Image (cartoon, rainbow, N blue to C red; front, side, top):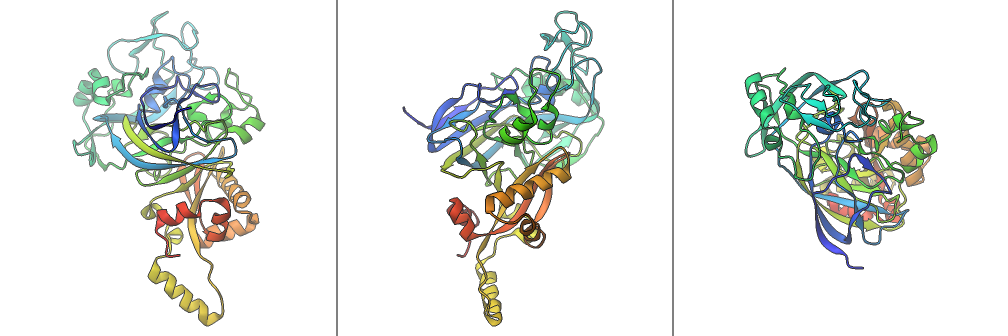
Length: 433
């Protein structure tokens, strides 16, 4: 079988991701993938025919990636393609879904499941059921904004109502929606509840990872949203055992998954199935509004298989500047001082490196606990030792409410060597040992 050294991926799922989705590739171990992503969240949320809260790229198989391995995904570049975005706080439409408005959509009038639709004008009722003509979107935006980006992708600025409505009339053009995307861009809502607010652009990828071992809605591939699939009243229900075993936490919404970071993801299906999507122009920790500025983007990654590294969830090596203060790597002058002081005490300091373990669950507390458990299992430490190491050499940071966290801690190099990732970590942080 031939392996591609580089693959451009501009095709998307219908909102479902899992082992029954045919993969592209395979791409060579050490090869590159360029994902042309389409906006996540709001566009797919309001599109009646899409069966997940996002519209991610079709997964890509990687050479030599077997179940029980891991794949290091090196984020080489993220370039925003959209000229504008819209977002805000959502509200469900009664009767427009069964159990989960992100997944089991139906027309609230004629009850047609995943109804075919047409777009009539602009505004929150523009998406109409083709069968009966009723507004068919399962979501409304109760407070939101339209934001435009400067040509250098440095700042965003929220616009007034007149401009928001003009953008709404050319929503596909302003959103630069890829040709193969099936979503209706959220820009058609024309929202302008915040006017003249500037913000910095800091693009990152909300969805990046590997394919789960069960077919699920793409936005639910994490411990918080995935929890709603347990015994759900729709075709994409899963069991508690599948929830605990088969998800890969590809939907992180961690704002440090950006250019220069390395994400190490578990392989739970043959070939790994690396996928991306849900790029954002910026986001504060927690994504407290529930959503942020979704954009189309060009995301370039290099993939590297790590044999025998069995993970329950992802590890993240963010940029040094994105690490919490106590987790930052030791520099040469600092380490020399540590060794000098330790020598006076008759102690040999152990070389360590920063690692972030992603934890997820239905709540922040449960996500943190799951992160501690994953760290204890992976690093062969007592649970209590993990708690101590996180307390004095790391932190717990919120990726997304209600339940994705980054558990940072300094881990002995000798442990990372056993896991086969010491070289990656040492090179990434340019460690002095």
